Amino acid sequence: MKEQIAKILAEKIPSLSEAEILELIEIPPNPQMGDYAFPCFRLAKTLRKAPPMIAADLLGEIEAPDFIEEIKVAGAYLNFYVKKNVYAETLLSKVRGEQFGSSEEGKGHTICIDYSSPNVAKNFHVGHLRTTIIGNSLYKIFSKLGYHVERINHLGDWGTQFGKLIVAYKKWGSEEAVKEKGIEELMRLYVDFHKAADEDPALEDEARFWFAEMERGNEEALKIWKWFVDISLEEFKRTYRLLGLEFDHYTGESFYRDKTEAVVKRLTDANLLSESEGAKIVDLSEYDMAPCLILKNDGSSIYATRDLAAIFYRMENYHFDRCLYVTGQEQRLHFQQVFKVVELLGNEWAKEGLVHIPYGLVSLGGEKLSSRDGNVIYAEDILLEAISKIKAIIEEKNPDLENKDDVARNVGVGAVIFNDLYNQRIKDVSFRWEHLLNFDGETGPYVQYTYARCSSILRKVEDFDPNGPIDISFMTDEASLGLLKELSRFDSVVKEAAKRYEPSVVARFAVAVAQAFNHYYTVNRINVEDVNERNARVLLVDITRRILRDAMDLLGITCVEQM
Ligand code: ARG
Image (cartoon, rainbow, N blue to C red; front, side, top):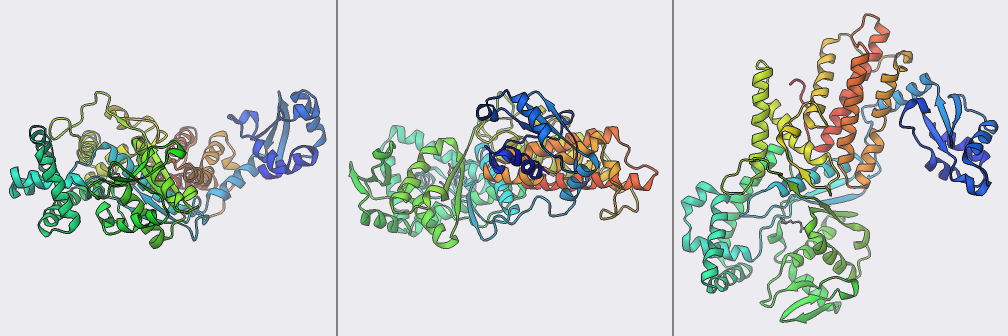
């Protein structure tokens, strides 16, 4: 309809193309101002007339298409009122198909997403929770659009810190303690190492020695290291299970240890490497960036070297169109440098194909979060706490509910995920239990509650056929049409979320749909006597339920049928 309006306007406005007019057409914030509005400001200059006069002239000239009920001038706008039944019919046919929201635009294209990537022997903290949640949502969003996605966990499992850990373990550690306490014990050893190294700097040399041994393939060193990796992975996977997500590849930094030499060779052949205090760097001063360090003065590789190796490996093996990196914004410079180096090696694709997706901090704002020792906060503990808080609410309000544990997990974990994704990713997330667990706000539990309400209505109706004929006149009231309008945005919402790498677009959409539905439900009785009316009313419940479920799924949240 918007296109047809643009078409008839274009015939009367020679100074603008049909595409430009289409761009200009707005959807007024409230239906009293029409369903579509064309602002005339842009024309004032060429036509040398006041915008309201232009609008009035246009009104006299254009011929309304038959889906239009009325056209009115309001200030500088020409407002189009669509015939309600045509409008409802059009929107309904758009949202009715099971596949609504999916597309094939990504067919034949591959996207790598590098996300989560916690550091071995360190706790999986709230920052890693964000990259995990955002990355997983982007995976779902791009998959929905038909892209092939490779989910890559670039674990921090290589580097000098493991030399330190080996030294500390050999001096002060015990097998039992590590077995019993896992990452907590490894973190203690790491802290102890630094305390001791302050007194005795020779320890640092020892640590460097052991990391060099690891790089050389020393069996004893690698055995200890591998054990630390396994222990850490086991803990990380517990968190992933709680979140209900998976990866296609656990290729951490260590995976590239035999692939960094080739990077150095490429850089040498391209004449890009220079010496600086014994280290090898790529000078990036021409691009206003600090140099990218490639080899330390002892010849060992670093984070950036392994990232370069990873990019070439992924290109050769996955032939990606784009490789996305979801990390905190403090790594912005690192990725700018690495991407620039890839480009300088003659790879034009680096410009569009490598994308850093930064996000803001989690601010705990005085919130009391459980921590295992001192101030260390584990993502796992947050998720478990959310689950147990929801469980307590269920025990109090609905003790007879079936599958209480499942419901508590999906609602609790979903609440944390939703809170994380509701605002633009670059903004800091504030973490407040009373907000994110609120059933009545812009929250996960609110959307879940709305979904469960839809399910419960549908359980109660009999002989409803979602594909049956519909009397559209039961969908032209303000609330039904309003709900249809919200629902019909889903396909463009998914596309916009992908384009901006912004799951918040989907989260906000879910809330808007839930609100429109709850309004619809307040003003309309659903399970009425009249079969035609009932079918129409129930159909909207059914479609809302499906779209809410699909939207929540794009965020990585599983909806519950009852709560
Ligand atoms: N392990 C890093 C960290 O915790 C994140 C790695 C991100 N991915 C990458 N390819 N550099 O900060």
